[in-house]
Image: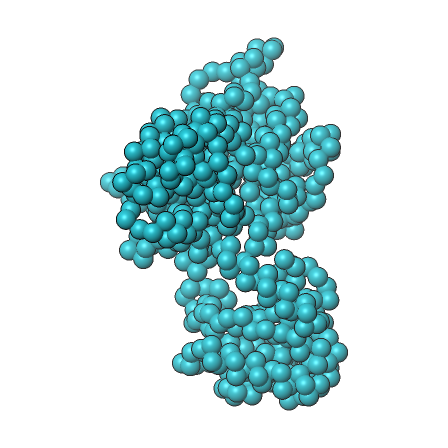
Length: 583
């Protein structure tokens, strides 16, 4: 899906269409006041104050009709530079525009754009004429807090998208429909994978039996890989004293993203937002020699972060998540080898899941906004140059992004393009010289001296929640056999004649730890077959006279219409082989 914000022509076109939207709204609702109308990757939106009036889908149709009328009229769009006093006078009746003007730097050039009877404050640029904005679609309307602050008034946000041609617009709308069908929230509900409830709270999802089965398989998969690579897994508490995060430095840089302190007697406890401070203390629990390193500590760890209720989204953005977390304590001479092993593990996992659309990003601190980061220029220069050097030596193609680092150090992020076009961070590998210093971590070197280890923070699947959302959308809920909640569904044609043989098949497969169901309901065969396909079961078995008499099984793969037949033993071996190979 096109990232409109990154396409220069489409970005200008969509921003111009946002102004066309505002002009049409002003015609239909003269009292309307406007906040901002930026371009986003999916198109554009405009935040509007309509007083107590709430827009409906019928209103969107009226607004779209007025926009087409204005576009057909074809007025040119003019840019004008004005003084601050002129701007304050011109927009004196719109408190939102006055607020924008007052927030501008004194020396900033103030410009506005006029099309016909409508003028809006804007930096631009714009297209030449409103006629160029005729191929648009208004998508939806929702509420949005003024300035994104929940303490402020809720404005109405109208979303839309615009293209140069009708064909481009129609193709994009088809992709949007496809994205709706792939939305993990929709599929998650249909396949009973996870659910939320207002009594539990936003961003706190509950994994249902089907989803829990998939998650269990994912956890087992990655844990087995890590054990083979020398990781030692631990369990650490979900709560900790606030002092732990003051020592680590998270308190100064991260407390706004944490849940509030719980005061009990003389203690102050918090739900942990990350696991690295706990793992630092586990390392520090005993003396280490240089021969002991690297030490790899892993944990499948639930963490808690306070996300605004309007920002949470299914499993993709939650308030409680479970991280595939690990911390590697290494000597400086081991950094390259260990980072290389992490990258190789990432690539191996991506191959297993057929993930091909990704990029490596070197995330650095923003030198012009150092408040977000620990204040130690020398440490930052060392950490960034070390990680960059390792990536170059390993021959990894990457791009750099300022402002995306963790507060304690740079990181390698793997950016995945999801099936519905979202750019999400999945795997991370971070280099950290700070926390070993904060926790006074040491090992004894070959000269008998105490020296600092370096810590590599890494997550391969990221969080199981986000990875699950990615998988659902990538597969449309049709999981591969080894992950599927139900792997085989057995349907006897007639219970009186075929149930005994169907039960035998079920018992054999259950003994192989294959997830199997025997559908012996008194329903028509066609109905049970349709339902099995709707549930996206990988293998549906149809057992009738022919199968019973020959000790065969006839099966239909999900998404296929043809039926195949195999001897029972060969079918059993086929399933076990595919599960083992994770096909």
